[in-house]
Length: 245
Image (tube, rainbow, N blue to C red; front, top):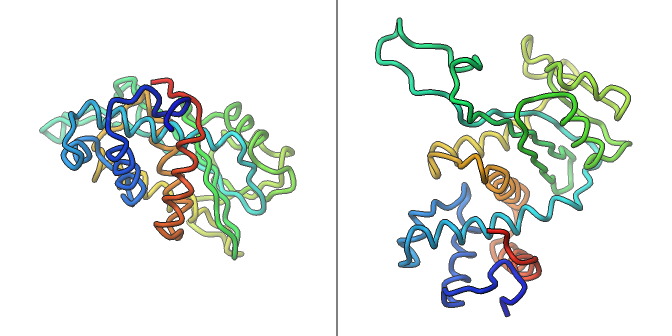
């Protein structure tokens, strides 16, 4: 049953694989490998690889996503900040590039914000917020007739003409007078922040794209019943190609 899927050449009993899928799907902010290893009574490395296979399979769904209607765009930087010094006068501004350890990456996220319809989220991991990567993501995954909402970051200036673009100037206000805001995408980044600080404590930069893919799926299915979500993802996991891990 697992031949040709992400679970090909498995050594774990099939029952434990099903248990791992259930534990990951029902965890609102994700499942830590150490926690899963204790639940399944397996080694940490086994749980770590198993979770990444699930994230990899979920990440493959993004290739066919085409966002429509109202779409919000924003970026969030993850990792790369050095530990702060003990004394206040010796502390450095971690937002500056010279005070980082070179492992800081940007998560570029696109999320639908349509009423009376399930919102979908798409993420891409890039080096920094720039017009080239933003253009590529929007051109590939956003319908040309969609309304795109972004903040005042200069990287999004290049999107003018690609789609209908509306800006929110966060330096002045969080919401424009007509109600235009980026609250939906900020809600997703809130989940990312909680998963980072409360569950995983650290995201591997090598697999950051897969972490974000799983958190995106959790955001999209948060109102879906567990039974429906479990069967939907079970089918997804067993219809994917062999894992690259």
